[in-house]
Amino acid sequence: MIHGGAPLVFALLAVAGYGLAALPPASTGRLSAAGLLLGWLMHLGVLVLDIGGWGDTLPGARLGFAPVLSMTVWLVLAVHTVESRLFPLPGVRRWLAIGGAAAVLLSLTFPGEPHQYASPLAPLHLALGVGSYGLFGAAVLHAGMLDAAERRLRLRTATGGAAFGMPLLQLERLTFRFVEVGFAVLTATMLLGFVTANRWNWDHKTVFSLLAWGVFAALLVGRHWRGWRGHRATTWLYIGAVLLLLAYVGSRFVFEVLLGRMPPTP
Image (cartoon, rainbow, N blue to C red; front, side, top):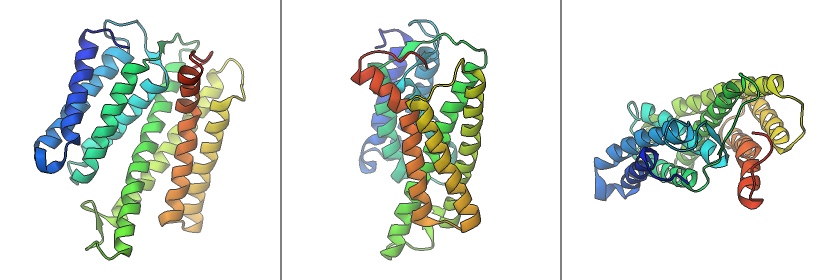
């Protein structure tokens, strides 16, 4: 865990900000958006000072399922922060705040460990991997909004063809734009991992990464050449996202929490 100092202060402020944003809208009003922004900024401080190794804790960037999950949630929140300037999404804000607070607390409890990289390209590999997690996380968030909007349309409770203040077709295009960019980043991550790896291992991370890549590839092919839309397309997205989550976060969770030791490779 974080043993005091600036990283702990940032973490507590992040949880406080997220906690304010997670309260029912009727009791916070405009403070909810301010709380989410505060939590997001303080969360960034935690990532830089603690997980990034710039604080007064152990030197070096740390790896682990909780730090990577924390970075992923922060990236999803970054997408929401930019997007909310165009389309306010108060209904999504509360759930994102809960996820942000949980990610910060989880990284405090399971901080991972500093890692020395064998290749100078390894940090880029990690950055691309986390980036792909964030992009697919944003895609899943938008797919969830898309599915919710379509359910309301079927129940005839939505009007104007809009979802969370955003036109349905625009929400659908945005969802799969995140998938396309995420797939490109994931492909670059896997190619770079192959180049920088000392030897090829058919471990859980490799297998689940390849399975996720295959599912996302099938989704994009099905969408562009078979016209997949709606529930069929989002189901493939959810399956691929779960497989990708199991690839790194899941395997590290097994080692760090269930087995009580760090894995031999990042």
